[in-house]
Image 1 (cartoon, rainbow, N blue to C red):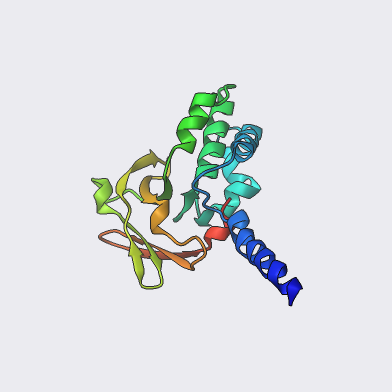
Image 2 (cartoon, rainbow, N blue to C red):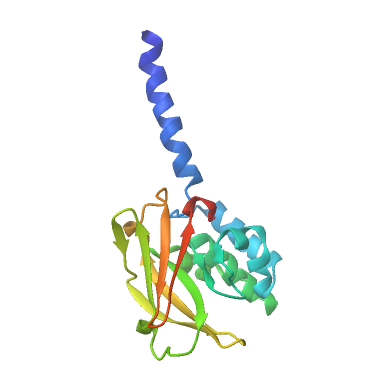
Length: 188
């Protein structure tokens, strides 16, 4: 019984601490995680980052070559920013890292055919977790692709999602509706 008094709290810390340690969506990255993401991105110049192990884990559907998208967590945002700078033989500055770390949002970037898309609001990106339907705070245009596809960015608050819940991403346009199931715990 005496053993249980100190053992149970320790067991609780271990059990509750493991999901936090494995959590894909850390709102606050440690300095080590920022450095790791920055160095990881620098290894993959430009769009090569999306073919890396971490880049592939953040993708869903046929992204970047077709329907689907990318979960741009804080870690991914640092890695992608670093990769894009590495393409120009530049590096992220400490100020850049500080600004990226200050964000309280993550992006869901989708790639869709550009026909009938005049405004970002012509595309609805919705995260569905059980009975919870989560709308983005803002939707904006992303990059245009050579194959007549348009990137749309949905900006979501970390506070609104449960990173452990099964999640469906619903993408609606006037002509189409697509669903993708994702697991946030797979995303770094």
